[in-house]
Length: 191
Length: 191
Image 1: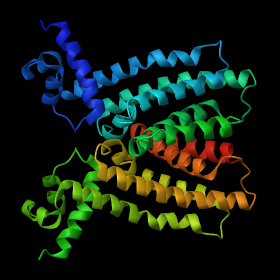
Image 2: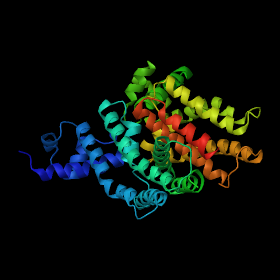
Image 3: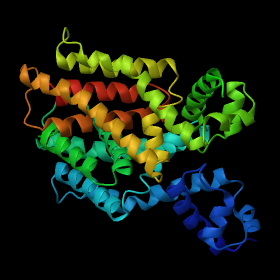
C-alpha cells in the first residue's frame, strides 16, 4: 500500500510545479524531483499527470476556501466584503510577484480540449459564482447596491473580469490591472 | 536562400497550431507537419519555436487590425462602435466553437516567464488599450458616456474583462460569458 506522505508530497509539489510551469510546461519527472521522491513512485499514487493535475486543481480550489469565507462575513456590508475579498487575492498575488497567476484561469486557457478539465472547471466557476452571487443579492436586498442587472450576469462578469486582470498582471508584473478592477467595479459599476 | 512561400506556410500553420495547442502543447514537428514541409526546413526560416511563436503573435495581432478599424468609424456613435467591435469578436469565436480562445490571452497565461513574450504582449495590450481609449474619450466628449472614471483604467479594465470572458467561453463552449460582458458593460457600467 502506498505511503500517504508520498502522495501528499506529490500533491504539494505537483500543485506548485503545475501552477508555475503549466500542464504542458512540466513533466512527471519535474514533479517527482520537486517532491523529492523516486520517479517510479508516481504511478503508485496517480494514474497519470492528468489525474494529478485534476487533484491539484481541487486542492488549489480547497485552499481558496479560507479566503472565500470572507464573502459570508455578515458583520461587514456585502459590497465591502466583496471588495476586501478581491483585494486580499491581489495582495497574495503581489507577494508571489505575479508569477503564477490563477490555476483556474491557467487551466481554462490550456486544458479545455480535455473534457474532464472542462467539467471540473465549470463546477469551480459555478461554485465561485454562487458565493459572489450571494454577496450581490445581499447588497441588493440591503439597498447597498442599486442595479437592474441580473445577479447571475454580474457574478459571472466579476469573476471573468478578475481572471482577465490576473492574466494582465502576469504580463506587467505589477498590480495595475487589479487597481483598475477595484476602481472600475467599486467606484463605477457598483457605485 | 530559403523560398519565401515555405516561411509563409510555416507562419500560417504555426499560428494555427500554437493557437490551438499552446506553445508547450506542440512541437516544431507538429508545425512542419501541419505546414506540409520537411522538419529540417524549419530552422532555415526560424531560429527556434520561440521565434516562430513571437512572429505568430505579431501575425495574430496584425490580422486583428481589420476588425479594430471598426473602433475608428466615426459614422457610428463611439459606444456603439465599441459594442459592435466586441460583438464581432464574439461572433467569430462562436464560428470557431470557442476552441482556441485569444492568442494574446493564451500567451499571457502560458509564456510570461519569458521576457521577450512579456515585452511583446505588453506592447500589444498598450496598442489595444489606446484604440479602446480613443473610443471612450470620444464617448465622453460627445456626452454619450457620463463617468468620472479615468479613460485609461476603463480601457484596461474592458480588455481584461474581455480576456477573462474568452477564458470562460473556452470552458463552457458557449457565448454566455460574452453575453454577460455585453450586458454588464453596455447596459450597466456605460448605461
